[in-house]
Length: 462
Image 1: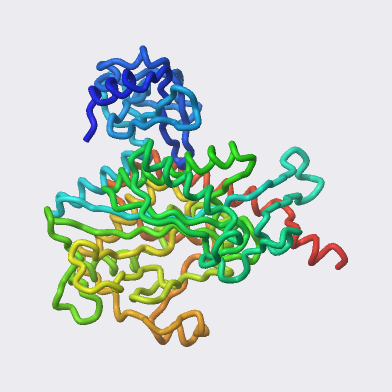
Image 2 (image 1 turned 120 degrees about the vertical axis):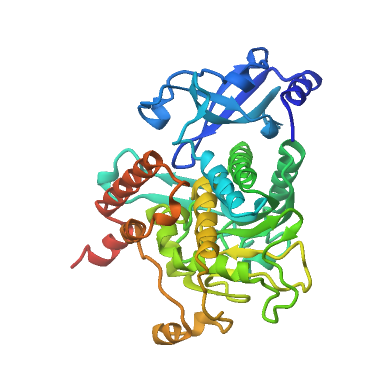
C-alpha cells in the first residue's frame, strides 16, 4: 500500500509539476481536475481538495460541499503528458469527511464490508475486457433529423480496401493481419510501467474489425475497478495520439460478436480460496462456490441494468447470446467455472460472463458480488451445470436443459430490478440508484424516438 510520503517522493524524483485528480460519475465516466504539484500537501490526503462545484457532475448535494480525497495507492505517471501524474480520488462530504453515497467507488467497498461480515477476508476479481480500435468514426451529431449517419473505417474490416482483412478466426491471426499487435503491446506496457496493474495477456479480439482484448491480474474489488478505468484511460488516449479511435461500446460494428467484460471472482478466508474443493468431482468447486453461482443465476436479470447498462448492450446478444446457466465449457452461459488446470488451489474462480465494458466497473463489481453473497447466505442451489453446446439448441432444448432467458432491453432489465432488489440493501444507496435509473430510462426514450438506418432500409419504400 502506497502512502502520501510515497507520492511526494515520486513527485520530487520524477520532476512532476502537475497532478491530475481523477474521479468518476454514476455512469462510470472519468472526470478530472488538475492542480499544481505544489498544491498537493499532507492535508490533501486527510481533508481533501476543493476543486469547485461538483454538482455539475453529481447534481445537488443536500449533504454539504463535496471535495476530492486522493487515494495514494493509485498514483501513476501519465506517460503521454509531460511532467504529469494522476491520482484517483474518493468523493467526500466536507467538512465531516464522510464518503459521498453517489460516489460509485464506494459501492465495491461496501460490498467488501458485507463479505467480511460473513467471514470472508477478501473478494478479488481478474478482469478481461474487449474494446475496438478503429481508424476513424464519423457521426452526424449536429443534424440527427437528416437521418442516421455513422461511418466506420477500420483497416481490418471486411469492407476495407486493405488486403489485411483479419478473417473469421479473429483472435488467432498472426501479424501482419493482426495489425494492432504493436499498439496493444505499447498499451500493456504503459499500464504496467506507469500504473502498476499487471497485464497477464493480450490478444486480438474475437471479432474482425480491430477488436482487442486485455486481461488484468486479480485484484481486490475496488482495485480491479480502478484497473479497468485506468485501462480505458490509457487505451483512449494512446489511440487518440496515434490518430485512431477506441470505443468500449458493446456492439459498435453490425454483425460482429461485440465486446464483453469477463470477471473472474474469488472469495478468500485469509490464504484459503473459498471456491476450491479438491474432492469435488465435477470442477473441484466448493459448496460455497455453488451457492455463490446460485446467487448470480437467481439475480441475473436484476444485475443486467448495471452490467449491461445501455441500449447498445442488448444488441450484442443478437450475435453473441447469453443464457442463465452455468458450467465449465459454455461461453454462452453467464457463469463459467474455470477447470482447465486441475488442483489449482489459488486460481479457482467463478467467471461472470455477462457484462460488457460500457458498464461502470465500480457499480458492476459491487452488485455482482452482492448477488453471489446472497446466494451463499440463502444457500441457493444453482441447479445442474450445462456442458453441451447451447449454441446448437433451440428454445425448447434450452428450457429442458434448465437454461433461462435474460431481459431483452433496458426496460425489461429495470422491471427485473424493481421486483428483485433486496440483495442490494447496504450496497447501493437510494440516491445513486434513483439517479442511475433516471438516466437509463431517458436513454431508452431517446433511442426509441430515433429512426435507424435499418428502418430506412426496411420501410422507406413501404
